[in-house]
Image (cartoon, rainbow over all chains, first blue to last red; front, top):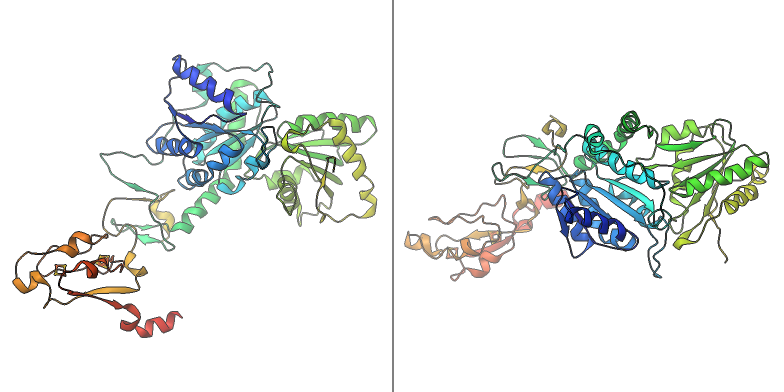
Amino acid sequence: MIAAYPITPQTPLTEKLSEFVEGGELNAEYVAVESEHSALTVCTSASMAGARTFTASSAHGLAYMHEMLHWAAGARLPVVLACVNRAIGAPWNILNDQQDSISQRDTGWIQIYARNNQEILDSVLQAYKIAETVYVPVMVCYDGYVLSHAEMPVAVPSQEDVDKFLPSYQPHTILDPANPKNYNLVTLADPRVNTEGVLCHGYMELRYLLQEALQNSGEVIIRVGQEFAELFGRSYANMFWEDRLADADIVIVAMGSLAMEATVAADMLRVKGHKAGVLGMRVFRPFPKADLLKALKKSRLIVVFDKNISYGSEGATCSEIKSALYGSGVNAVIRNFIVGLGGRDVKAREMADAVTKSLPLLKEGFLNSEYPEWICYI
Amino acid sequence: MRTRDCKHICDESSPGIGEAGKTGEWRNSFPMIDQERCTPSRQNKPACFLCWLYCPEAVISKTVPVQINLEYCKGCGICSQVCPVQAITMINEEELHPEEDTQKS
Ligand code: SF4
Ligand code: SF4
């Protein structure tokens, strides 16, 4: 079941899907709705009735879904949503940054970021398997225009292989008139004994279970990535992508397509004799703290590029990296650069320059408490 | 017994009285019926029942005498407003249980 409302740059996706449904190539119900809020409401309702659901949005559309994003996660419905990352107004802008999905960070969704077009397709297939195993909705994010309107050769797996990989959806609860149930009614602060005499969760216990599900979902994400590799030959058995981290003392961190650009920046730094590597964030929620610590053990300088900012603080990825390293004994200098907002082009050379500019900080004993720098013309 | 034993992963219940908990606990005043004024009681036959009709919580019985289930009455006072013979008075919970309220504060 697909319910989506078109918004740039997500539009080609919804257009294609509705064509597939209309042409009979995709055996699905396409519900045309009047808003993104309704799109996700239709998905959550259909998911409770036992259907596998999909929606997609960007920027203002995703913001308009905000209430229902919380709802889908709280109701533990394995909805899959493609977020085609776009900047949020004011002022109006239709181009790419990651402020839209980062603003939905705390809604209880798993967030996966794709670096290229192949990863978008592969991640959507994995997203269903992950969501339907841990009963947490999954958002697959990819950069608007950078990927959404760009073309690259993509291996499209066969229906038989996909069916082998992804079993049919088993709902944990199902609306059924023959066995009437209430779901997600007013649930007060304290647990209550239900009409059958069973002590049931209060609001807080249900929210604990959501956190527990996300905490434990890392293992499932990796296992599903391995299973995917076995069938399709492309491995996703990781929470982040590693490029030359084994000997790197300078690590560039970036998420989404920027992680590809970062490998070019690392090439440039390597030519100059620096031991640079790249950590490309793939799964942002759950945040892979433990794995990250291992990967960053050798690092002395970590330069984090964020296409988003928590205003008054810093980029979201940077905050997460700092929190993961706290108390770990890795005392790397961490530098944060805000880049690419509203579609501003980010060049590999600029990323390499930002790293070079940060190198003297290694000697100065720089404290990781400053606000980020912006690569812009101000 | 811990709540995990219920095995739910989202809020789930079967239709039934009290599935949302004892909602009467929110109330700060409650309705008291003066059976000597209430028409069904006075005439000893089914009559009037306007309070039963208007109660938004469906906690008033259509019986002789009329009874109110205070476990779920939210204290809105609609019944006392619609009663044509002023048989229902809203009583402040604090007046009834002043000692409890002191403990709360
Ligand atoms: S106070 Fe309100 S809820 Fe309580 S019995 Fe009267 S009408 Fe019903
Ligand atoms: S409305 Fe008043 S008189 Fe009528 S049944 Fe209710 S309490 Fe009695």
